[in-house]
Amino acid sequence: MKIDGKLIASEILADLKLRVDKLAQKNIAPTLAVILMGNEHSSLEYIKQKQLKATEIGATTMVYSFQDSVEEKEIERLSQKTR
Image (cartoon, rainbow, N blue to C red; front, side, top):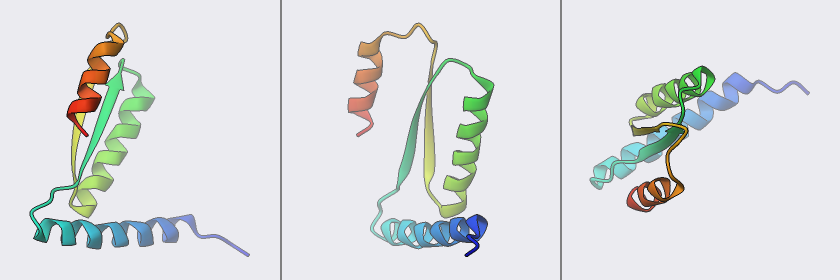
């Protein structure tokens, strides 16, 4: 049995788009919040791909960037705020 990952991914995205559209009709805006610590190139690329897919399905994204030296309390406050 051969698994077509691209086909599965496109089906998942299509389903998510329908769900996001239904939420938008109720004035609910699904948002992906990302907390980025540091400036690692691979992490930035990963986030960029997530932003593209979110836009594709009609969701918004918010990226919160911090230096590696950020205190844990600051991250916890942001986490509580974005829930």
